[in-house]
Image 1 (tube, helix red, strand yellow):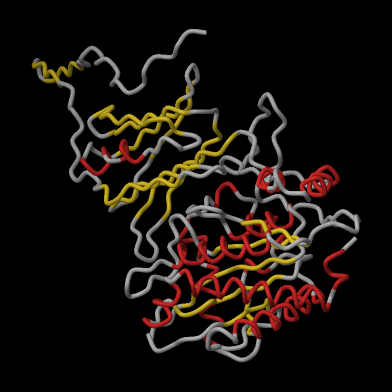
Image 2 (tube, rainbow, N blue to C red; image 1 turned 180 degrees about the horizontal axis):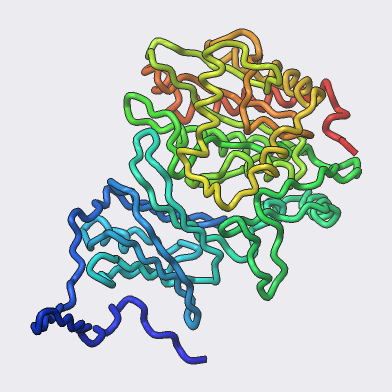
Length: 453
C-alpha cells in the first residue's frame, strides 16, 4: 500500500486566475486577491483528556469557528482543518500536551494550511471513530471545538470489570456473568448515524437503550456496586475557596470506597470513571446496567452561594418534583453536567436516550430510599448532616429503571472548614468506610435484593 502524502504541507499554488473585462475599448486585468482576516479568532486554551475509553481534545476560543475533518491510513492519521484561525503559541502548545501513554494519539502537528485555515494532523496509534463538534459558551467556558477519538470497537464495561479482577478469586463468577449477558457494549455514533461495519462487528450506539437483564442466578454471585464519581474532564464540578475541585475529591473518595468494597468476601465495585475524563449522564447509567450492578452510588461534593452552608446529604430520585427549591436548584446544577462537560447532541438519538432515563419504577425508588437511609445514618456518625432525612429530586443519573440508586453529597466544598476536611486522606477514608457500613446494613436487611435472579 502506498503511503499517503503528508497533509500538513499547504497545497501548491494554482496558476493565477486572470479575467479580462472589456469596456469602452479598455481592458482591466483583475489579479487574484489573497483572503485577509479582519479578526482572526483567539485560542484561549487547549486541553487534552486521554482515557482508555476515548481521548478528548478541546480548543477554547473567543468565537465560534467551523472545522472539517477526514482520516487517512498507512499510517493512521486524522486531519482537522479549522477555518478563521491563525497559528499562535496557544495552539502550538497542543503539541506538548500529548502524553506518551495516550491510547489513541502518538503525536500532533500544526501548520498554517491556508491564510485563514489552521491544519492539525493527529498521528494515531489505532483506527478511530472521530466525533468533532462545537459547544456554545456556558459557565466559565467560551466557545469550544471538541474532538473525541473513540475506538472503532468500544470498550465493554463488563470486560473492563473482568480485567480489573484478573487476580480475584471471584473472577470466574464475573466471567460467567459476562458470557450470560445479552447486553452489548455501547459505542458512539457519528453525526447521528451508525458507523459502517469495520472488520469486526460494531456494537450499537450509546443512545440505544439496553434490554433489561438479570444477574446470574448463581448463589455465590458477589454483590456488585457501581460507584459513580461525579463530573470529570471538562466539567470540574464545584470549586472550593482554596481551588479544590469537586471532580478530584469525589474520584479519590470513590477509589478508596472501591478498595474497601473489593476487600469484602462477597462484594465487588465498578467505577464509571477511574480517571479524570468526562462521562455523559446517560452513559453512567448504561454502564451500571451493563455490569448488572445491584446498587448505584453517585458521589459528589455540594456547593452553595453562602459559605456557611455545611453538612452531608443523601438523595434519591423523585417522580413528583423536588422536596424544596434548593433541591430543584441542586438537581438542575448536576443535570447540567452534560452541557458543561460537553455532549455531542447530534450523535445521540434524543428520544431513545430520554426513554432510557424515564423508566425508573416506584420499586426502584423505594429501595433507593431504604439504602440511602442506611448510608445517611452512618455518615451522620462522622460528619454533620445537612438534613436528617433522605432528600429527593429529579437527578438524571439516578434514573436506572432496575437498580437502586442514590447520590451522596459528601460535604459542602464551598464551606472552608468542610473543604479542608475533604482534602484530607483521613476524612476521605472515613466517608468511604461510612458508606460501606451503610451499604452492608442495607443488604443484610434485604438479602433478596443482592440476588435478583
